[in-house]
Length: 453
Image (tube, rainbow, N blue to C red; front, side):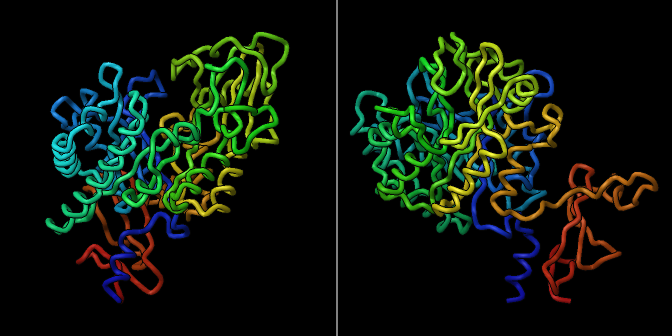
């Protein structure tokens, strides 16, 4: 019993108040955004999310996992070094993208020997680069003109990956790799792409992409990620909302506790063409590109908050989400209020947690929205019931606290706190983190752990 408590206490669970997952995606192309929007793993708060998914790697013609960016290996290392600060953090590598406009999964899953080569490559690549798991970002099975074949082969891939991960852990006496995938939010795609009841048992969790329900490809305004349908949703759009999508996944046999609700940190923009500017107003394409994301029809939260300073912000009560307009620009987005509504739905329906697309489009630096660093994700974390994060000791306003300088010049690692044996310090990149042992335990520097006195 003492040994168990020792392990639990030294790991410092970031989510002690909740068993839910908070999975955050980061993208390797965010490093190319200009100025303060440039994002790398160095910008990540290691205590913010329970899991981080690194996007994106790909598959070559030999069915091997390959990096996409020139410095992926360096970024892998930076990301996984965060586990030295928060040992509870889990990291996954996402595989997907396209080769000459086609998903690299299609030729890979077509033959058993191709899948076998991929699986061996995946295990080796993940272990070598210190990832805890694999995320499949196949968007989407069924899009190559052979939906039934794709569905069946995707199920086979899931079964074979799951079994191989289990065997790898057992044979090598190491922690089993995690397996997840990004699942479609639109019902017609779900039907075309997945054998849900056969797939679900083989995954640790499924990231439902409950966003991009509407966008500038349509002729009228619609919200990117509405919680419920609106009275304007008819025909094929009737189920373009979170409530319909997630309920459908559950009805097909996906355990609710494996489903993660998608929370976007971006909005979809439109160019208005009449005096109407509400939901369903006529449009003729995307709004202008933002200064940082530089993609027409698409703004990150840190661009939206600047826009809302001068725009008119309205609330769609039917769908429990906001939108903003100014001149001919219209954006449907998420804010703290809509996040809270979605967390309530998520909790009521006993989902396994949330996933965020993406970390790098929240105001991660806290310098653009005047709401602190990661305002959306921090609000999501708090709303989900996670406890307080370990923080660096505060900088005093008058006499400088010597504890603040404790880690200055010291190597990364754990250190005893001579002033309080029930706490200890963790040094990382010169910062001092104060941690607390579980009640009744004290820190022992000899084992770098909390144990009985």
